[in-house]
Length: 373
Image (tube, rainbow, N blue to C red; front, side, top):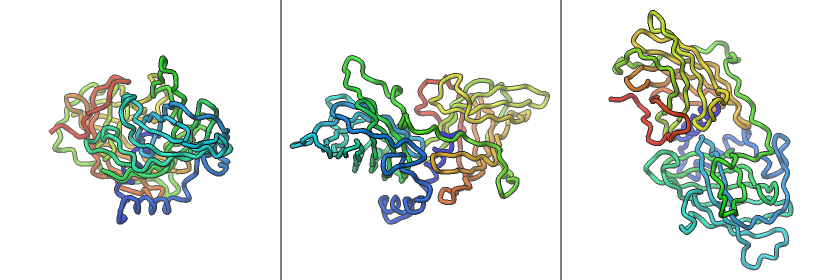
């Protein structure tokens, strides 16, 4: 359930920013979370991740795919050119022009910046500011961010690493721990698609698998009171099928939920599986559950003592989803909390969601995130 908690973390981080300016907030957040962070091998040797890097000629066009902290996917096109007067001896000075990956080639770049390759092919690109359309986080307002890419070169065709910085407008979201990778895309006859490019260094170790259902050190978790859905009409229906789940965080949370209904005398039960909306059909589920359904189609999904490792963070949460079955799916509200680490601790009360029929692989844009009025 990695995508679920990553997006929860991104949303919760918005409520923790309270400094005098977005940049102050970001610096304060870095101080609070210093012990949780690593550099993914883009800086000093990291025993927990890949560190290999070699000097290579990076001039040309690249397609970069990134998964920002909070579950935001951003694709960029980067073109490197040698800086004026460059002698090709390390450190090599490069000029980088950056676009969104699907912008026309003749459009003005979003930002132009510089990078300096050391004798092992390591470099840093600073995009300050990087102005992006609000559509990347399903908002109307444009997005402004300071993004720092700490990269290492795996060869003439690949560079990758970890990012830092922050989204500063229209919300505050730290980007520390975000990952990215870039592949050379110089062939005009066979341009890459964003789906061809991984989110992270291919030689980094696989993230730890999520560990669900482990009793916490504090003992059994008390189930929170379910949100009141008495004002939402509900009627039993067979919910077998695939559903697009969208919650109302500032950065919308979206999941693919597969359900199998087992009818009974008083409503029956549901077996469910949760996956990323980017998951391929047949890919193992991130989480599974079974729940009872009342005669009027109401049900609850309870995930207590949920523990997930994300990079160097160990995240613990208790999540309750109360649901009402509507004519075109189901909807409701959440309860529970993120418990650990303390810097991200936050109640989930007040978060609403809605699930509508969905064909995996289709667009998720414009999906509703609350019960119909």
